[in-house]
Amino acid sequence: MYYSDEIIEEVIGRNDIVDIISGYVHLKKKGSNYFGLCPFHNEKSPSFSVSQPKQMYYCFGCGAGGSALTFLMQYENYSFKEALEALADRAGVKLPEEGRTVREKRQELLKSKILEINKLAANYFYYQLRREQGKGAYIYLCNRGLKEETMKGFGLGYANKYSDDLYRYLKQKGYDDETIRESGLMNVDEKHGMYDKFWNRVIFPIMDVNNKVIGFGGRVMGEGSPKYLNSPETKVFDKGRNLYGLNRARRSKRNHQILCEGYMDVIALHQAGFDQAVASLGTALTHGQASLMKRYTEEVLLTYDSDEAGTKAALRAIPILREGGIITKVIHMEPYKDPDEFIKHLGAEEFEKRIAKAENSFFFELRILEQGFQLKDPQEKTKFHNQVAKKLAQFEEEIERENYLQAAAEKYHIGFEQLRRLVNTYVAKEQWTKEAPKPKSGMTKKKEKPEGRSQSQKLLLTWMMEEPNIYPVIRGYIGPEDFTENLYKTVAQQLFDQLEQGDINPGAIMSHFEGEEEQREVASMFHTHLEELNSKTEREKALKDLLIKVKKYSLEQKTKDASEGLKGIEKIVEGKKALEALQNTHISFD
Image (cartoon, rainbow, N blue to C red; front, side, top):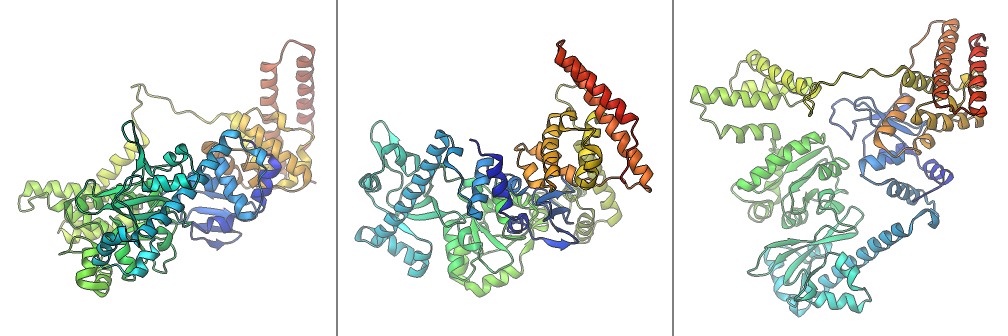
C-alpha cells in the first residue's frame, strides 16, 4: 500500500485534531492548548495536551503523542491505511485507487460483501419471526415481556428449523460459497457440506456503533445445546472490541452506562427506559471493550448475574474498567438473578433506586474478599488486613489511595497509621518490582546513558521547531545530511523543507512515521521546553556550541563511512572546511 506525501498531508490538513480527539476525550482549553485525561493510561489529573496550531497531541504523563492519524491508530487500533481512510472519509477526500494493492482491494471487497450478507440475513431473520414458522419464537418473546416496538428496535428475528434456509436464500441472491463461508453464518463439514449455523433460534443482530450488522447471537427454542450461540469472529466482527446495544446506548443522555451479561438484560432495560445498557458478547470483558466504553462515559455500573458466576465475572471486570480510567460501581439485584427478572417483578422505579444505591466497586471487592476469612480469628483477621492493604496499594494516585485508606480503616476498625504503614510497604514493593525487573538472562544490564550524538541532534531539531527564526542563521552551516540518526534525519529533511517554505506543519512530519515508538520520539521534540538563557549572548553561544557538536558527529560518521574513492575523500575535506568555518564564525541573532 502506498499513498503519496501530498495525499497524506491533504487528508491530515482537511481534519482538525481538536474536533477528532474531542469525540473521544473531554477537552478543556487552557491557553493555546486543550487538555484532558489521557485515554492511553490511567490518570486523575489531565496531562494530555492537544495543540490546534501544531495539529498534534502529547501526553506529559506517558509520552503518547502524534497527529490525528496517529491518534486513530493508537486509540482504535487501526492500521495506517485504515486511519487514513477514516480521516479521508470524514473530510470528503477521495483516495486514489492506485494507492491500494490487489490484496487490499480484495480484503476491502470481502468486508463489504460480508456486511451486505449480514444485512440480508438480519432482514431474512426479521421476516421469518413474523411468518407462521416463527410464531413460537414470537410468542416466546412476548411471554418474556417484550413489546412489538422493542422487537423492531433491536431487529429481533428467527432462524427456521430447516438448516439450509438461509444458505439457499443467499445463493439465490448471487453470493458464492467462499464469501458465504467467510460471513460466519454457516457451518461446513464433509458429511453435510455447508449449512446454516443458526437454526430454530431467536436471533439477536449485533451492530457496531455505526449501526452496521457485524454478527449475530441466537437463543435456542426448546431443548438444545448450546443455549446461546454467537457468530464466530470474522473480517468485520471482533468480539473483544464491540458491545451489544452500544449503537443505541452511545446516544443516551445518562452520565453512565450499565454493563450487563446478556442480550435480554440489555433489551429489557432499554424497554424500561434505561437506554444506557450494554453487554459484552459472550466473553469476559476485555480491555478493548473498556476503551470503547470510555469513549462515551466516565462511569459504568455493573449488573452481572447475582449468582457465583456473575460475582466472579464482576471481580474480573472491575480491575479492567479501573485500568481504563472508568469509575465503577455494582448494582445489587437480590433477590433476583438479573436485570430482566428484576424489572419484571419490581419495575423501573425500583431499579432506579438500586442505581442510586450502587456500591463502590472497591468496597464490593473487599466485601467478597471478606467472605473468605473468619474475622473472629486474630490470625485470619491479620491475613485479611494484609489483603486489604495489597488492594489499596494498587491505587496509583496518592490522594485517591489516602481517601480509600481512610474509608477502609473506618469500615474495618483498623488503626489508620497502622494500615497506612502496611500499605506503604506494599507500594514500595510494587514500585521496586516495576523499576527493577529481573533480566530473563539472569545478568544485570547496565543502565544506558543517552548518547551525546542523539541528544545533540534532537535538541537542535527541537530548537528549530520552537524558534523557526533561527533557521536563516544556521542553514549555511547545517543540513539534513548532518543528522546521522535515521529518525532525526527524516525529521530534519521534512523540517528543513517546511522552513524553506516558511510554514511548519508538525502533523505532516508525524505522518511519515507509523511505529509507535518513533511517533512518541518525534512528538516529544515538539513538546520539549528548552532551558531559558538569560541573555542574547548566552543563546548565541549555546546555539554555536550545539551546531559544532552536530557538525563534528556528522564528520566523524562520514569519515567512518567514506569509501577510498575520490568522492568520499572530497566529502570529508568539505566537511572539515565547513566545521572550521563554523568554529571561526560569530553566530548572531541580529
